[in-house]
Length: 150
Image 1 (tube, rainbow, N blue to C red):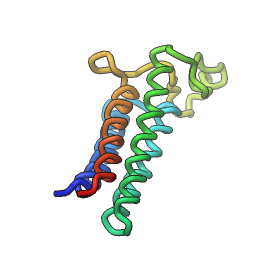
Image 2: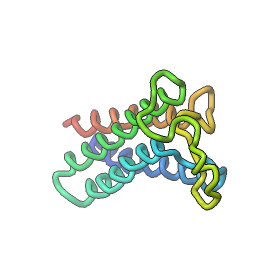
Image 3: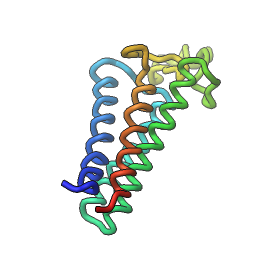
Image 4: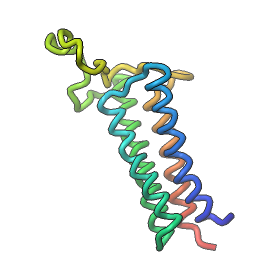
């Protein structure tokens, strides 16, 4: 398989695996996403569509590069989110800080999930941190493989 073929497979597998992991965490383990978690998922959805397009539309190299950029975008959002969780900087959303009294009283509302608290970590790295690491490395690899011409 040449570099472009490898890039196309990576561009399909990486966002699919990360989104599958996010949904397993959400529905099997109760790790509900905050607003910034959703921001990380959107580029992965776009990357899936773009990677599928790279298998059927031409120029394939452009579609796979766009998918790589989408994955890289998700990783950069994850890096920002991880920084908020580790208190390196302040978040820009209303999901950081204590919930309002109205939110607490509304028992029909969705779970209140704060963006500045990591609900789970592995080896001291939060889910947003893992998304940053995996997505930036994979996005960079996809772009490099897509650019390589033999």
